[in-house]
Length: 291
Length: 318
Image 1 (cartoon, rainbow over the protein chains, first blue to last red):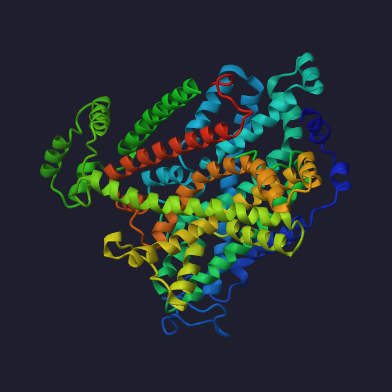
Image 2 (cartoon, helix red, strand yellow):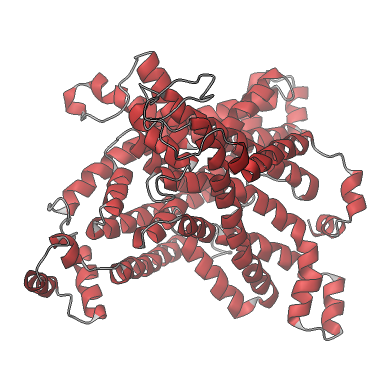
């Protein structure tokens, strides 16, 4: 186990490239690239303003003027779905960034210091993890009125513990190695060792974990919006759109199906990227080892 | 083993105390207090003052906490603010419904998930394997609520096989009751199955490569016996771990699925109370969910230890 990690934790670019790039990474990157392009250009490519009411054409099925139909207010579903890509991606990326910003330093410190500080950090994480994830999110959102930032923040907080765990275990593995011992023997400062010696060697695993977390974050944010505790109307979040479309399943099933499909494609894309990265970078490659 | 279990139970109690403090603290953070919420925004200063007095909102916080926590320990869960009924019976009945949903879903997840995993492993890299992995990819990548809606559209609206949502008690006829359970169960099962089948596949593949499988085949045992007796038995350990991890996802799934199908269980009660700021219910149901979650994790760990002879907790307690 340790031996395995020695040669692969020092992933050099050459080493990465020598391996075959997994096909799912290629397909996934393509999908994600398209979603990102759509999300960033959405305001310019949408056929109608996403919140414009066309009162004379409510609940229209897909047609030439409304490619994905219209909703109960006569808003263009395609425009709303495209704008929704922004919210979803923002949620996924912002939430994961929060988890990383808090999780990585905590994990590094826990793994490096061992002893009492480690114990304190990890027990706190255990406390976080004694809630089912969505309940923790609900608890945070129950306290205050919802907003996009708060939802993303809540989702980010929920996923800190797994990041701390993975960072800590990588740090622990690295701690025993010569170059760390050498750095300590040279009398380097702790912050230097953590930031310049351990972090560069720990990033592949953290990166893989982070990319997989993005999908969890997108899905949970959507679920929270769906439950009415995330993004608020008239925003065009996919979870919210599906939730609003529930009352019109008979009259306009496309209102629910369009954002749902969009979410499917996005999440499958990010998942493929995460899996591909894992195959490329994770020397352990065992499913189910981590929570 | 006993020492380990006792330690874990003690730890769970400790967690619950902390969670109860957290949950209680929410009452303090929330803008406006309980009295204001009960009376609505048009209350006069006087009635407000009187009700605040009645709820004991002027006492020091530790006193208030103690009053709340000790009444819960005595089994008095208090009254719902919005529905103005005692919480305990409401909680009990919705818990029962959710538990039915959870157990049937878990049952099918285990059965179908392991089955699919084994098929995928045996037919490795053939059509069946790819079909299973595509199927599981869709399961993971699509949120439960969307599956729920697709199922409603297809099975309830289009095929008209089952009612789209709602719940009726068993006393109103078996089919009436069952038909409203099918779609929520199917949705939950479908969204949880992927992990189990993927993991069973990989651990089964690993097992099938080991020497004793070659040995069993060389002995001339029928393939079925080799796969099930020798292969599956040993491949199942990691699957149990992932089933335990899925309990957390199951809770999330239940909250969402109950909302989609208007199924009056614990999750729906919780969401209702959060949206209506019904604090007593929020507090009690979050405590209850945390307790169930911790206990089911403990059971999963014990089950794992029981099935895996390499783990004995006496030596590794803590």
